[in-house]
Length: 420
Ligand SMILES: NC(=O)c1ccc[n+]([C@@H]2O[C@H](COP(=O)([O-])OP(=O)(O)OC[C@H]3O[C@@H](n4cnc5c(N)ncnc54)[C@H](O)[C@@H]3O)[C@@H](O)[C@H]2O)c1
Image 1 (tube, rainbow, N blue to C red):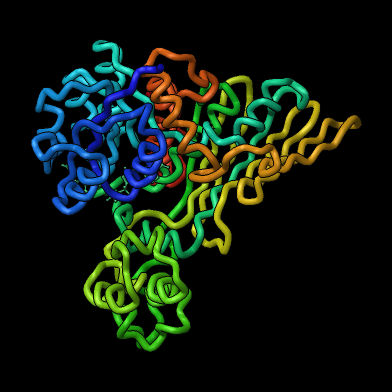
Image 2: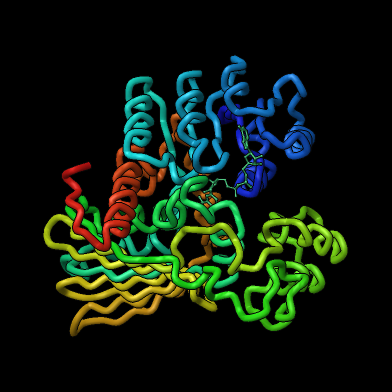
């Protein structure tokens, strides 16, 4: 029988819920032996679910990693700014890591994590879950097979749904660059990673434009209140907290993002919370500063041009991509799980990824596959080497995101990646 892996977990919020679900379904593979969360209620709930004794539960991740608990690895799902101190402490204490993205917020922090991992011989799997999705793996297979020739141009788009933007990047945890990080790192480091991975080339230069155009005080409708439940537009504004949360609960839905505002809500309890919570604020009266739309150009080795657009003005979520090669092209829509591949003058195929008989739950099937690979890695078993996020490769996508933000702030200046 394969070895049961012992894991610690720090940061028991929303993202942990995904991994906790995986662990609960694979008790023979994983045992949780220590936990940390600043919120005692979350800590207690997780300890209860996995039978972790009180003596192995801490309200600070640094205390957990300093406690000398015997474990193979640690999952770090604290918020962005804590990833750096928590990952360094965990590696120094002897643990391999599954580390949420963004791995770190600055170039120096990224380098320190990479150097510490290399010096101490720790695995650091950064949670770039898209690499593990059947959708992107199929696109990668087609590119690597050579049927579309040499890739010349890639055009990709991340459609952030309008309500997702309001929830996470206007009212929520990722609304400010100083307490979280710029949007291109927080949300789109998935994209910089996947685009570099698909092309298999290094990035030579980037440029970027973008701004916070809409979610600003001057766009607040006349006579609107600063909290949705007191506002005359509560039933007509598309960003109304009533639509986003209360109406969903009334319709029987209590999952993400509603559960971020209130766990197991009723209409009454979520209404009460929204009277004082940041999630009940007018989207034009928050202290947000991250962009709501941005474009990024990347110039890769061998003259490959990549253009990426992130916009929050979308009715639909999901990523789209076009890969244009010398002998054919790929046009794909992750929202529809559809990949269209044409080999010029020869063939045209439409692949419905949902019909490949694979599990597509949780980031298009990426969440479970990433976790399974981490467990295999710790057991010394073969892993999906095509997808596995090496810390080196992940650093490159973080550097591209950081360079893109520098470029955006400088009005689109070209940044040569040799500076990184
Ligand atoms: N890979 C992905 O696709 C993906 C998706 C969503 C979120 N994320 C990332 O996951 C991370 C967590 O996001 P989330 O939505 O779960 O946030 P969250 O706020 O729901 O959870 C963070 C948890 O950390 C706890 N915490 C704070 N300080 C702590 C400390 N010192 N020690 C231990 N715990 C502490 C908080 O109490 C909270 O429960 C973020 O970095 C986010 O960017 C990644």
